[in-house]
View 1: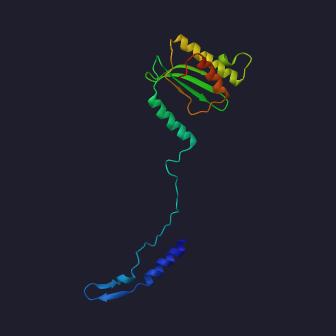
View 2 (view 1 turned 90 degrees about the vertical axis):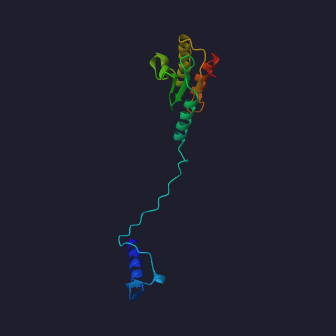
View 3 (view 1 turned 60 degrees about the vertical axis):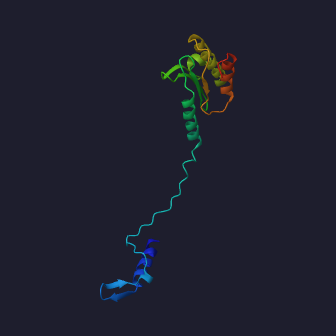
Length: 172
């Protein structure tokens, strides 16, 4: 393709007609003028990029979560409850955003929650909810400012966690 372009350029130059002028010497006839191109012609491939609005699903969830955290900030008396649910486990945190502290952290991986004979992750999620309620009572927390699910759907583990916490009136 580059060779064909070079042939076109050289063919265009040889077909140009020049006329003589007494004042300026030889000049090119403007009616047959072609744009001058250098001999080192490099053709770049056409690259089509998606617009910046086409984010992936995880990027959209992160953007929504940032917007959510700006709006709802946790305080020491009314912390934010943040829950992350991976493919197999559930993690819950009570966050004080003003002092940037985690007041409670519990997950279905903790041996104290799993028990000596290991239980299912659904039962462990329920126990995480129990530990959360106990911690809230110990810290004199009567209300939670916001419940942050991080964009995750309410699966079996999430529902088991939510039912126990909502029975005690902590979910808004």
